[in-house]
Length: 149
Length: 141
Image 1: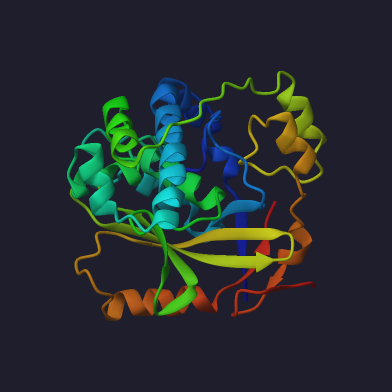
Image 2: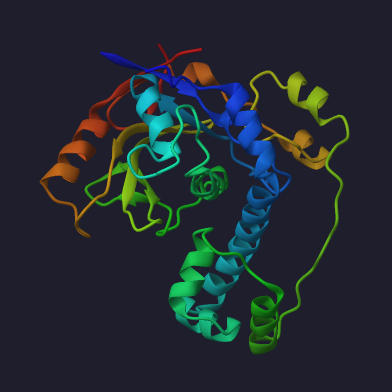
């Protein structure tokens, strides 16, 4: 089954220092987790002033991660390939005393790279990947996608 | 649950914190330059932190966008390694939206492109991603 994905680049604010890379990179989200993603950005469950539709809680971190991704780079603190399966990457939201991750798939073509946010893993408890993480990574590696517009 | 993407909310939040986000983007841009430099010179992040006058942990937070570079840190690095930062002020294209709209497949990181960027842009081919196999390599449908 093909997973529907939607481009979320427009979600990010217009910044003059989003340096344009020589390589085209776009950011997508698996539509099945759209609601969960909005809640994640708003800090649902951990943000005492959470309001539905508010995505400001984690926006700063998402912007920092997006900057790394748009530069076609990796950075251990923010965005890195998973050792268990390098087609899977993890966005790291290690702040506010938490260790939350968004697991992504990287799709490479001759014209550029798409990074698809596939799964949300809240508050990873251990430094090394355990069964739960491995199982998510395996699942993400298996997805096939179609673009939904 | 009605928490669909709300453009109204996004605009509102973006406007409110735009200065903070721009500062993160600027600090991250500096970090990329320094990252390339220390890789080339074989300098560790620990050494870079010492030169900047901060702890390795603090520098890690700067590299992750949680903290920002300040001029004192950059001055320390400059003094330690005998480097000078080149600064250039460039206006973003005035009619950037028209340029942006003229691109067949809008790359979203391209919000306010410079003219040089526009000239060198290679459109992203979305069709090549419509059928993707497990390996992560795209194939046409």
